Image: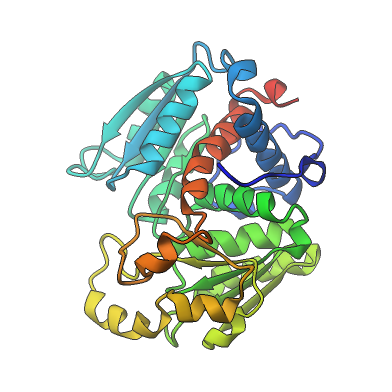
Length: 325
């Protein structure tokens, strides 16, 4: 990675999450988010050698209803670097809760593994797993939230601007699951986020209200807008695919989002200081142009790398809290 972090503002008291689940960012306190990101930076900058045996004798299961590149590889490699073993269960042709009840699945899995990472279609599946399992369940993506992505993204942003209160992130496009988690992470850290969407594609009102409630306590600012000029002066501009896996309203959605493509003109509105972010995979030529994706302003591969570090830090906090000190 080419970005440099000033660690002083990331240093926080270490928290023990115990057997807590992570279904969404608001499951964590602001201090816990800071602690996870601080340790993630230590993993990135110092390497994994000091923690190479932290997960010795432990097993983690990955249960994926959706295809994956970054999520699967980052979880597998990160946990293995911590000394643990991983089993991958492909559920794309046999969704959870079909072959047997979700509760029965969860009760079985908790007898075998120390942690379950689930990438699923519906948030209700994550909720069901959390209710039925006594070992930690981590939401690796659902239709409502993508908390691990947001942790990695704010690790990346804090490498650019170590003071969370001075971070101003602009989301441009559909108010989707990634957008929800970024709002929640900004709220937890006291940062600023401006969400710019077409009319009718704003983030979920209930999720926004809960994030706004946290923001009121932390000094964060969450702004919803339909005006692209609202991104002027931001730290970074964030885009995502216009149509996610499983969505059926693709053509109408693409038509509404065409004016929101992140291109050179839009980045000029943001300003020369602005970086470009994307959770990947990107549909080049749709939500972002090659000229932006491949520009010096793009930090998308820093984000991808930080997925492994942020998730490894989360796993240490969940399963080996004494190793986080």
